[in-house]
Amino acid sequence: MKDECTNGHPIVDRSRDRTTSGHCRLCALDADRKYRAKRRAALELVRALEANGVHVDPDTMTLTTAPTTEPTGVVAQRLVDTHGEGIE
Image 1: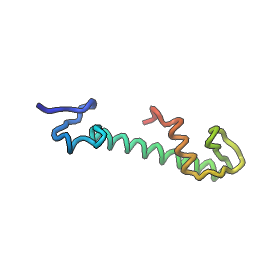
Image 2: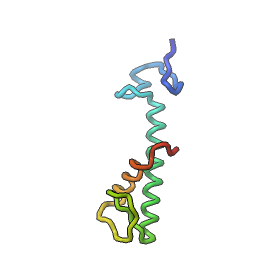
Image 3: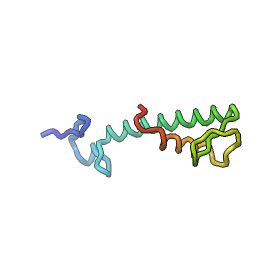
């Protein structure tokens, strides 16, 4: 009997087709790809804003002209965490 994940991907060999946490490898790869795309977009946005003198306060997520002390990656991660759900 062929097993499938909730998204219809075939599960032939449980140890090979599932991650250590039990998720389908194809679904996990897809989720990772989407997360990386969101992170890249957030980094591009933060860099573009900073290049034009606009900075994002990572704690309040407000725009300011005062440079932040946080690295660009921290601000981008905060954007993904706050606004990344549901964006494909």
